[in-house]
Length: 268
Picture: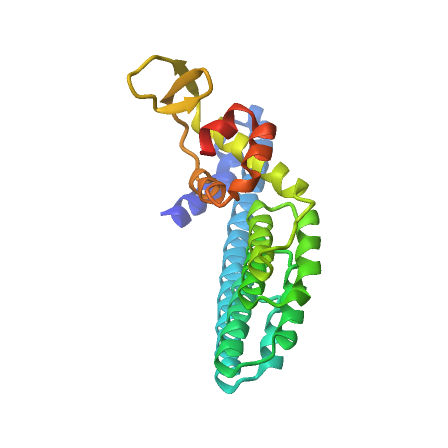
């Protein structure tokens, strides 16, 4: 149908000057040229769009095949106990999921073959500098599970310099796993990031709060009771909530001091 319309427009643009009276024929000639140019632009844009879609499809297929190939390499390396190949895949630029799987495979290989912690900690420390938040988080989690003190310095560094709350929480937890008696003096970045996320959640889930006096309060705040009467849906809400519940109790006071009313609402 589209081709018929385009064909009709081309014929119409070509015949337009000849269908007009001689007096206004120059104007109709110009109109025909303009219409022809518009039709040509439309055709070219349509062809380019098809070419781009085909190219993107080809790239997607190629990327998927490459992803599958690297998944197989990780599985094979784990099966054969090839630690060097797994270390190599922790730096893969193909897909974040490859690096995540390689990190988990290193942990499983260490557990199954009893590898020395010192051998596997190095690559995991390197993963703490990954560009993807999820990779850094899982690297910290695995380092905590391994429990080698060699990782303490790097985890402390990440705790001071990272900006993602999920990573900061994972580093804090990992440090406590490695050494329960370790005194973590600098929690500034973690406290600030937690306060920011709590305020963000507060602003997204609370549109209006009205003061009321029920028999049992919905939220308990010093000297005041509030009930939410409206909420804004937000895709990040649940992910933020899942992080907030992981904030260590020993840091609640500091976080509440920075987040104000929001901290009292979401930190019990």
